[in-house]
Amino acid sequence: MRSFIVGKSKEIIKHWRDFPLRVGLVWMKRYRIERFIGMGSYGQTYACTDIISGNTMLLKRNLPSKKDIGRQLLERESCILKQLDHPQIPKWIRYEKQGKDEALLMELIAGENLEQKIEQGRLYSVQESLSILKELLRPLEHLHQAGYVHRDVRIPNVLDDGRRLYLIDFGLSCRIGEQLPETLRMGLKEPKSFDDLKAHASDGSWSGAKQRMRRPDPASDLYGLGHFFLFMMYAGFEYDEGQAERSWQEELELPLAVKQFVSRLLQRGEPGWASAKSCALELQRLLDSLGDSADPS
Picture (tube, rainbow, N blue to C red):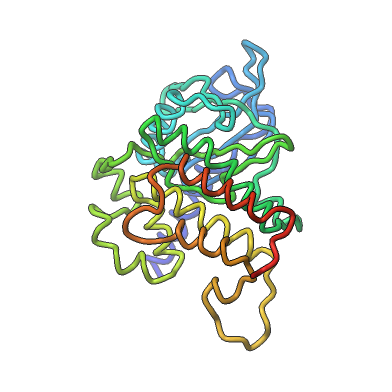
């Protein structure tokens, strides 16, 4: 009973610490909170107004309950964003520290992420989904050329403002080939060596897929794009009651060329392409070959 009460108390304290900042609050004596946008595993995001400049921007703060790990991730994200300059990546504005409070300020993008759009009933065709991959390969190419890997290419991390798509949330990004500091690695529950996870990464589970996406090399982002595409396709998939689970190649009615392309994104071992740019070139050839029709072959 005592352990149960202590556990519940810790949970209540954690939720209290991480409770979103109220609308109208001037945080750090400078940023007026306009609305709460969302909360991830390690941070919270808000639309705010800089009362000095009058500009609106996005404010991201670390979750207080995550303590030093949350601060490390936020500061690392700031350092990476500061070095990037691409129209599909939010622009870095500044990083603030005030006592125990820290905040990353960046460009505020007006739009919805693709997860929200799918939850609202938006379904994407094969060609639309492939075109989205093509658009995302542009910021990924820029990121990789700058020497970094995203490691979290998923539909919640893609914003659509009606004109273009944005790749967001660089909280798990790292340098290509980087081995994270031990405290951060343990906090994220990442292995010392990803080579130890070959069995788990090949079992077809989401846990195995996440581990493969966390590898510090550009191929992990292409692998993430493969799962991204499958998620888009399965959003409108209808299972037959009582039917045994099959592989995605068997369940999804896709043109053969599309299956081959996605299989190459998901292949294990050596990356399917030398770079995001070479992947984009092949994807363009695939889209050209499909034309206005994507009927299964």
